[in-house]
Image (spheres, rainbow, N blue to C red):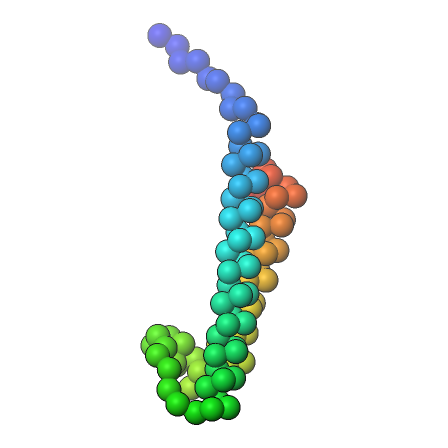
Length: 96
């Protein structure tokens, strides 16, 4: 018995990649908003003093490079995901 090869349709694949692109854009916006929130939180902490709870990773980054390092990494990640989502929505057949 021979197996029949059915070629995949291109429409559902394009739609799937379109929604993955939207997800990446949403993730990028959340990362940018989180880095802005973190920057404002660090600025308030440095101005008024006091303490705040941070994860181990963020506290190490803050001790090494200050608030600009912590927020810069989040901002760079957010911009990367915005770009990747936009690129994926414009070219639905490609994905990383």
